Figure (cartoon, rainbow over the protein chains, first blue to last red):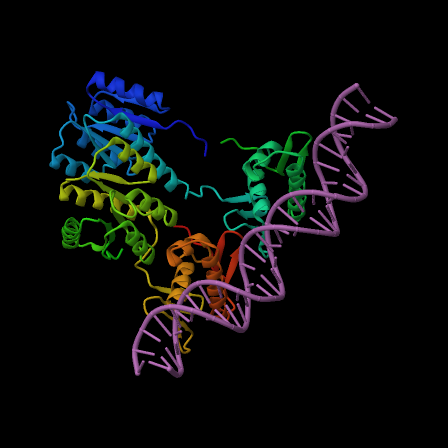
Length: 240
Length: 240
DNA sequence: ACGCTTGTTAATATTTGGTTAATCTATTCA
DNA sequence: TGAATAGATTAACCAAATATTAACAAGCGT
């Protein structure tokens, strides 16, 4: 996955402290949205997609717990860290009940916060990678299941695909009727772009063509010097 | 889901404190294994399947961080909480680097610990899809009762399955017609993923195939480099 | 100690996957 | 138009993964 900067929603009523903390996080490559109370925090939360929320507990209008509960209603996944000046037991317990991921007493060490943030975000990331997103494709009369590495034509016996065949066909399918740059497949699938991997890729293109020639409507065209194009007749490149 | 008691590995060198904490957790319906140093902790960890590890940082022979690192090598999922007397920043950072889920300074409030435990275990529970409750499966013309470890075909004499045969077949059945990753079975059933356990698993796959070949409709396919797939013909992988 | 079950390791065969080579065709551009 | 470069296709080859059977070791109840 592309390592876009992680977005953090920071809700803190003390403008000085808020600004300092925001700067610190920005310096550490996070994209930070600062809200100065619970109300504003919730509005901003609804308008964007955050990877993490850091909420001050004591705030006017709407305290951190209430905000956390509202956020949880919208999103049961997003990690929440509470900041509090008090270290009262009741508060800590309340925080965990609302579904906090962590808890930090002020004053706290900024490096510790940073570490917690990284730990939490990394944990989420490792959970998300079990996300197999899209793995089924219709290619003319063919059906590709790239998780099971099967290519099925009509009701015939499925063709077993090797990992490379599978990934290459999947990548072509993802660019159906559009250019699939050679370099893309080489860097993503072969993890190296040189003369030999390029020859290897040609071999795989040939294999795929052999499979696909059962269907008149489907073919892999070469775009000289650029890459390949999986053509499915009577269909046009679709936007996403 | 069956609320089996959650298993906690508690590693604490102070025998008094360890015993008290263990009792407290047992009273709160956890199943606690107490180890009095890092060595013992690791041995016990390898022998069982824990839902959570609570590690004291300062211990003779093998400190908490080292132990945590070893545990992480075996299992990247299990939550780890550190206990420490010191509240040195370096220690906290070190803990997070090793992959801690939380951090608690002694003396701490036992209720807070309990809350953290519950929060962490709940989080894991909602992530994991390892369904522990189901124990009866229809596999083509076979019926598997994984509690009694019986595999029945038609009205023939039931086949007794060994624990490993049973768990492996169950795991395949849970993924019927879908990929059952090799690594999943190895980490869950064999608790270790290396060359030898992998060979061992192959042996068990062969045994299961022998049992299953009575039914034409059922077979275990290999997906090279990925895992296995229990195929039941005239059925399709179901979405959830 | 004996037999039985269970699981691991070994030994060996087989299959699969991927790269490279060899040869041939197509495209580009000077 | 004819090198030079890019792509196509088939086959040879090697390494890694899997299959299968057998030998072996540990644990356990009798």
